[in-house]
Length: 271
Image (cartoon, rainbow, N blue to C red; front, side):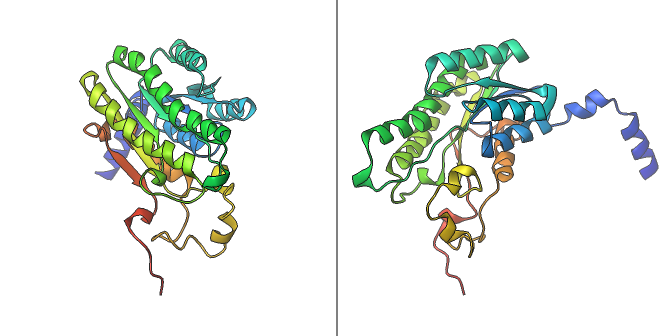
């Protein structure tokens, strides 16, 4: 019986084996995809059969990552705060792959400062990228996704969209806003078979997280406030994003998906 099964697998056409991947035939645009979590997401989506557009302002890194991924990937410059850049990126995506049916609003920045020392410029910069950039991305995706017969939007928020932490007031405000915008968009766009969900990572091992001045204090002894006792990896977030883009999450919209090692569940008491 096993020999017969293996023979059938070898006889199965390659195209049909490829189509069994859960994002086969999808076209997904990922922002902030030149490095870190965005690059991990792009790699995961290509591995699952998608054609992926990597978008970022780090052109050299983005182009290198797209080359690494081969013919299923393209890189386009995109400043998420620019309406013009969004229009151009979506148009180029459709020109390259024929449609757009997946969007991951991953781009984000994080700046630390005590509230009393936070400048209006810093506030506006974080809100522009983390909140307004997400709004512009969703808005740019609506018509192409309607034309494609539906789609899935994944907005990367944070555990900071659920609680407050010191010295990141602007980031916290933006991530709470992303959570709310996701729900509003999901209610509005469900009639078009467009699903919108927010993904809330906890501490993840990326260059942005390592910019935290508390990183060195946490790293040697592990992340003791996290029930799993460790930091997350970008690939773990990418797997959850792939689920949200796929038909496996076809009845999920307007919801929050948390990947934080249990941090939001409550305080840890270590023996």
